[in-house]
Image 1 (cartoon, rainbow, N blue to C red):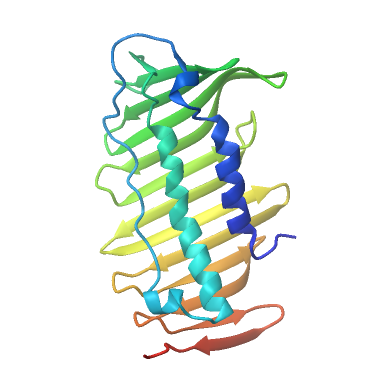
Image 2 (tube, one colour):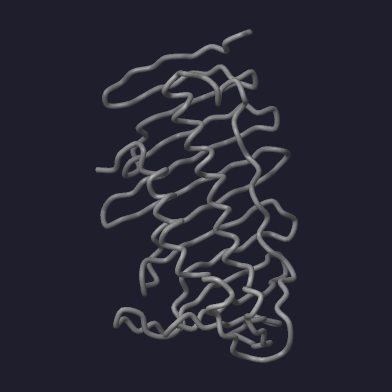
Length: 246
């Protein structure tokens, strides 16, 4: 069973695990042709948070929700992996039906890392691929990450695939409509799943739901002034917190 602190723990694991993906430029050997790397568009960071009074509250559920929202927002740090290293080489390549695809490639030991970018009529798309051998495992243009974002900035997706498979290990999706962010994180491991879904309104109010195996476990609601309420299920309990006024 997942622990309630699992999203924060997973974020720390991501930082360590992703260190392989983009090493220091001095260790990279470019392959390919056609000029200096440049990315025509990179995913837009999500700027979400909770009211300052809530972030400073001593209530454990206010702090829990604050940590979850910060973790959801922090996943956009993964977008740095969709920016090619300075020594990567760029080549124009057509993949499947995608037109005007650009691919950057660079070596990292026995691996060749590739970053693919293309546009559809409504979205930008990115793929981050491994090709080569690592720890005796052969990767054949395996897609590690995939991301897309609508050109009008109203929605986006991020998928991280389980090692050398097409199974999605976690997904991170968001919409931004009329000043309202709707962000969902889903992690799946075997038969277990963990989902955190948050809505942050333009005035700073919002709510976050925490699901274990599709069963709602915790709900936290907060208001624009930083006060809020919480509910837990199985066992059932609830409470509120107030804003401390100076």
